[in-house]
Image (cartoon, rainbow, N blue to C red; front, side, top):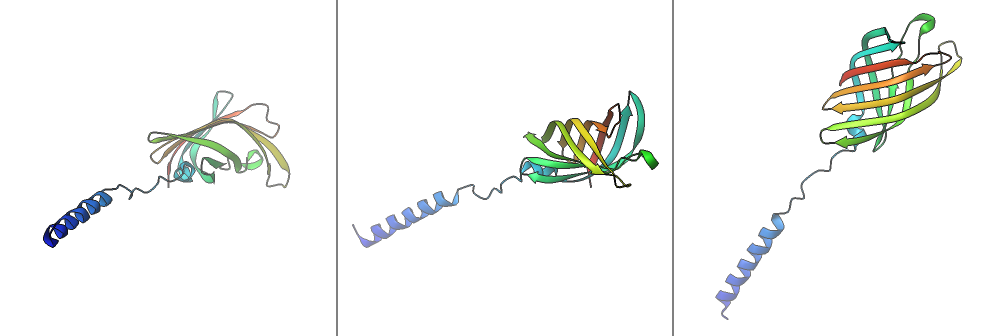
Length: 162
């Protein structure tokens, strides 16, 4: 084998190996954790129903904070007025799942306590929590029993990320 043939063969081998190595698709960035995709502030319309009657209908801002890669904590804004004011409430560790372009969350029940403006502590239970996020729109539904209220407050919120 002559030097000329050997050099041609080596050049061809280098071109082939370089071409195979350069064709990999390793530039894709991993998708952000599902909780990171949900985390943020959403402002929109909140409707509160008590015993089938509309109690409140107005603008509200809900906050979602990443608790883990697959769970979020939701802050329900203050509602009501005067002695009927319900302070901000937190619902922790709502599990999330992604399905295509949508992210859904579901939690059967969460019980917590909150300190009121007067300094007393009140218990609350938030049940039947559902979240559905598609693009920047969030829909939240839940039932709330606050303090000694005999009936639940059924809430529906639809908002967009700020």
